Length: 352
Image (tube, rainbow, N blue to C red; front, side, top):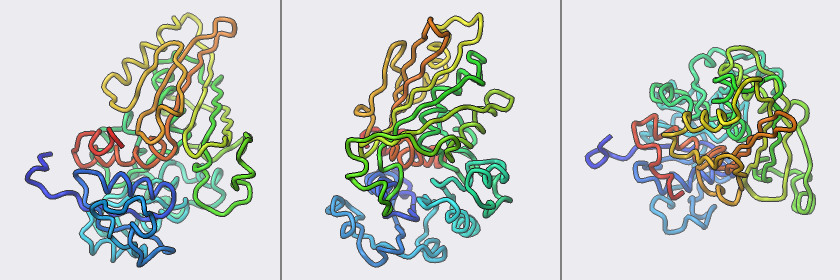
């Protein structure tokens, strides 16, 4: 797209005052091809972005005031696209309203990630608010679904844990290199992954100098992980997933293990990853023996992936790291936005 002669893409963020919303603000205010025309927050309506987030002072566009999340008001700004950084169960209603008004929607909640409304109810505890829309949504993992993203009107941006687990696993499952029934994923996430809410368990004194597992045995993200692995395998896949909370602001480190299938050369693991991500600008392969470190990916859209093979147990070990607010949320959604509008995937992201 030749943006030298085209206007910037008018864009809205719905739910812009949370951690993910703030990350979207940072990225889109600096994006060379975006004009941010609306940012919504019920709590902050009427205040300028820079008043709520002083870090944005002096940035072009930071004087924009927060508005109420009214679909007519958002559409009246001329926005072509909207990012939804809202809780699950809330996003679906406004997504419907904005789609009817001609906007393209990139939803960062879980409302449209699952293809089966019954699975949504099982994992999220209530009926899906718009089951008739599930077939229209594209699961927005850019490295896997770029073609579908280009043609989409509704993109369901993946969860943070699923991104860290799926990108290392999908090429191996698709090629039949590992026994999918033996997959065990252990993830550690920074506290920002729990969202910006008042919760005693998330207070500094409760989290600092501590680490704990939570959400076992059926964390909500397990549903989309199993869905995407099942699609890649061509059969139902059920795995064990154990998330942990660690005392850092952001970042996810995941170690996933699975049995190598009999007769498979362990070096085929590295070859499959290289083949899958040779042209993926935000996947950095660390090779055999490489251990991903969150300090190298926080505040970026990169995911680092290393692997090794344990001859004693016959297990493949996959190590990945990403920023849960970046590649696991805001910047990955912007990457999908870039694909959707025919931009270069790295626009506004390489030095994010």
